[in-house]
Image (tube, rainbow over all chains, first blue to last red; front, side, top):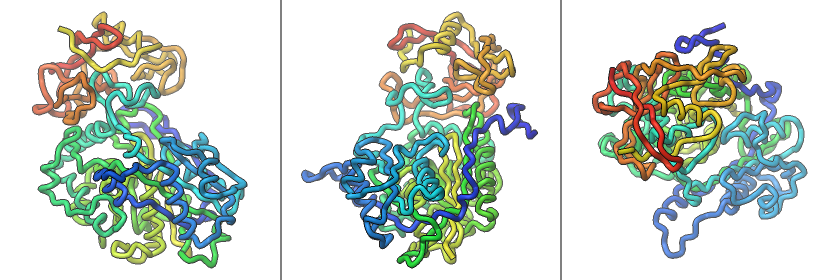
Length: 418
Length: 135
């Protein structure tokens, strides 16, 4: 038994994991990709001209699907499986199927089946499971988040209730919002590792440079360290540019079994391994003092083992940058760099284009778009297809994507089909 | 003068916590089976799901682990900048609270702090809020 050094309990008691069937490794391929126009839609929403109509969930999802279908080169009739996810409402799988003229034999109702782990990637994992177990041949999975259009708020009394370890609880002390989670983490990190205020800015700057190489990114104007340091704090020490965007969008992937993924326009991208670990209790401890290192370490090891690779084999990383500091947590937690050295590693250019482990190459969620990580998977697909244009990671064969909330880690390893 | 605060969570478990606070006592639920101290309140032990829990009186002492200051206004009741701290209670749990008699501008990790109860009110009425001053 390995004891947690703060709490004195077995480290495994602090985690809940959902272990997925390792036999699915290598059996499912992404063969189609579609995204909406993040940057153009965001600018239109900001401008709000007289003709402007906020996009509804279903039309966003349909736009992403049509592009994914076209990208795959398949016919509409080939789609016999559907997983349509609308976390903020606005449509349903059956309504979406009718709007897209689809007649799927297998529909995943919500994508929130308990076995697939919680969080925004649940529909994706449910879709992979459906293909891996032969419930359908060709499946479209679409995830739609009109976050800006629905006026999604991320703090204060906009939420109520929730589980014991939810952050909703601390209202009377005035503590809420996602930003506060990252701020508590970063204050601790700063004090423990003697980090300068400007150090975290390096993350936002690199991701902005990446976004400038991505025509579909939301934020593409140059960002300097002076811009960063003069930007407003949301929850000190976390600034505006340390937080992900709020925008409207949808992502769609077409999946099929690897065996059927032949004679296609684009190189298939293979799902090789995944892991999952969630904080079971004592969330504040795991989140602030350990920055999820136990969860990230366990889930990362599981994903790498399933894929049959080591961390040194990863050519490209896409991590859940709800905040800049959380991206550092993931780089450290998965073992790309040791704990406390992540910001130095970043400042030295290791995560930039041409560095040891190019990270969030399309601009991530800080400067690209916020689609609960689905846009990061889209970037993985482009990189492993070798279609990432000016931001292509040379010779990319293995990518790691990481979904990571304030209490969970869910890495997925993808490989280029050979 | 009572401070107006955002609404508490009330209901089973929560109500007991606030009743003890009103009596000037910081009490959390200790599991009779595995001895784990849970926070926030719940109807079972967060560690072993044991159902026999005892509200244990704590020392009210702890140390500052981390902190953050709200510059964006999330609650109409509270003015920004708004300081919050994360305190490791001597008995183990990490407790989100507010500094009293000091601010986050002059804060350091491991600063010893002691609980006090602030007279407050929300939509449910009067209550005593546990906050922390320097030892």
